[in-house]
Length: 149
Image (cartoon, rainbow, N blue to C red):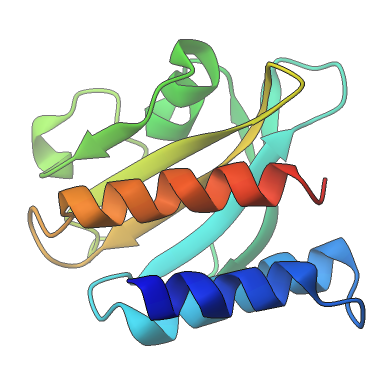
């Protein structure tokens, strides 16, 4: 994980790329390095609206480009301000299905100046794949991402 953190840091610190490009490169790196990350993307607060708008991502196209607060796992994290790990999406009544292949999901909020401004959302085609190390890595990453926003 420390090698992956170094690579993520070098992307975020790169002066050659704008924020959007950096976030896209982060998604690509996570997708390549962690085999059970099958959809990796960012959602951000949509202006003053109580909704999220899709940012850079890697994976199958999604219809969920706008998610109202409270809807689905991403919408719940926008309200709860807490990381949400879903070992089996079929057990979750508020799950918004993006793909029939998705079996598990983890969503980690991004805070800037104490406000929840977005999140990283990762779907997996494997039931219950996310480890404590994954959670710690993603929470670290979201803290690092907040520094460039």
